[in-house]
Length: 137
Image (cartoon, rainbow, N blue to C red; front, side):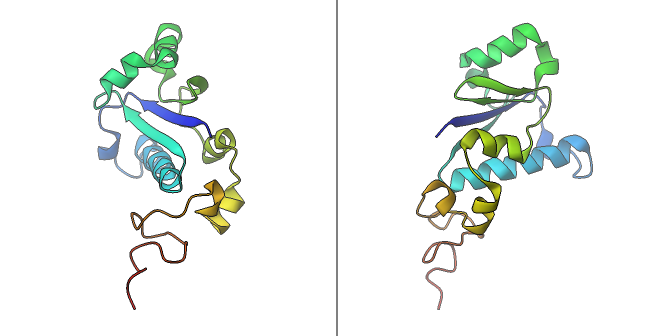
């Protein structure tokens, strides 16, 4: 499975109003990456302000900075290959790189990546015996 990284230069996108383009897109992408990560995918959102060393260590990010400058961000890489620049990736673009099917993920979220569940880290897990309600009876 590919390693998906979304690099962002906005200093505090989480502080943007939800009805702003940056705020809503940031929340959509980070929710998608978190959900996929909880299902076993290797996904990560990285922000220049918090993850500066990772930006400096990525050959793909350095290539974007040399070619497009700051207009190349946000961007997405898959196994260090540049996939999207200058905007947040769509959910479909993320899933395509992972080789995952959205309908399969929605129908059987943990099975989409062959994972055994989130271990109780999310409230939306559909794996029997997993999630916060697993021990409640």
